[in-house]
Length: 235
Picture 1 (cartoon, rainbow, N blue to C red):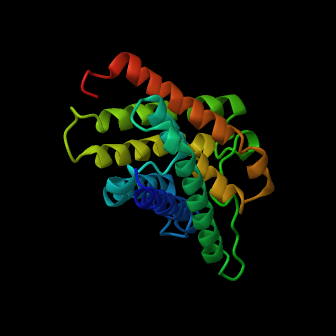
Picture 2 (cartoon, helix red, strand yellow; picture 1 turned 60 degrees about the horizontal axis):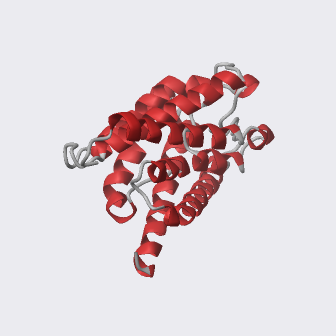
Picture 3 (cartoon, one colour; picture 1 turned 90 degrees about the vertical axis):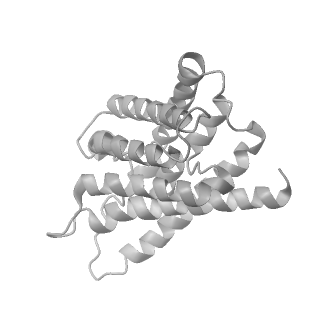
């Protein structure tokens, strides 16, 4: 890939991850608990799915639409993405997430008496929305990310129905959030977790390690399951 295309791919990953964090985390911070009109967990789950769905169709043709370091790593393991391009993608994704979290912080704090709470950060134990343990959080993030990679690899395989990959991936992320928001506030994406942790309460940075380790482990697991058990000859 030439330099111009590489820069465009990095830009697409930056913008796509920016949109994912601004749309998904923004829905949690600004709209989830709004009096009377709050969208709740289900609305936040849908918002995350919609960001990936719209981003995949808008930016996927440029970069592949990863928007997630764990996804990029999983696609390398799955044989769908060259390892030589991995570092640039991860840096772009993390920077996009940080930029979005900064914009969200500016918006959310621009209200008299603003209470930012957890600022859509991820956590476990006393910082889990449902009080789930570190072990439960670890298992949840590994398994959910593994399934996410299996869906991504299956939905984008050559034998899959053309043009529907983004829809399947967006709906999968929605379902993942519906299941796991009570456990960890749902990460399955180290960039998303890092961006808001930098602007959130102190505990978020001390627990951030889990939301890098577990999604990456899950992505590798999902990619290996796909390659060994599910992939066809034309994938």
